Figure 1 (spheres, rainbow, N blue to C red):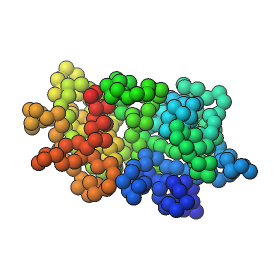
Figure 2: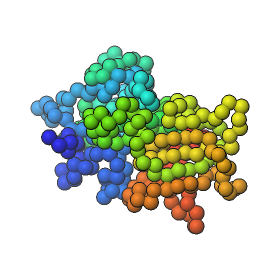
Figure 3: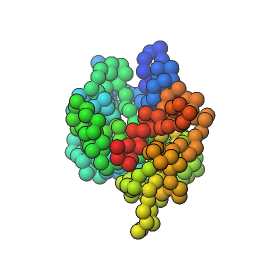
Length: 297
């Protein structure tokens, strides 16, 4: 069976691709950062009966048991600490979380995490019950500081594991390449992804991302002063490499300088990373959020 048989589309008249990753919604203008997986079993009332299993060995880093607290509904985040680099995986819209699981709990691959459902801070129809599944990287350990500066009217209930702070990769090609044994570690896979945009950032601060994902990044030599960083971003904004810049930013008044840009990627109707402002190229809104989280706003 093709993968489309397992994707939950967003409506009866929508394409199966609406449950996939990428610019798949609102005629390609809305981004979806994960896979929506369809239930294979339902009870007499139409409720999903599928169990949800851990994709890999890991540790529970976040567990939200109140559906109204997030658009993810009831969800949990695992960090896969033995991987290089340590990816996260996220499991959302759960009907319930497996009893006994809590933050810090170790889990093994294929361990039951909960039951598929339709929970969210908005209404998901029962017949659209599904698992929203993500894999990716976490931008910062200081998410609350960024969140406080934005003056949101609701408090952050998810610490560093808010969706704002998580950047996903497309799980389908990741697992397809894994099945073909084309890479030994996730690092090899991430290094194979194309660089969509490269940005020089004026900052003397070393992002904690550089420390947490040391094999993806290059830390400054001890005792040296860094005035700028070169950041390479892959499809839809996943950070692929951050390293000290060898040259300062050309403009003394700009915080960001676009060093390179994949023009073909700019043709997508959503998640463009760079836009034109006057005669200059500047980070688009989503990329600006990522840069703020990485370096502090």
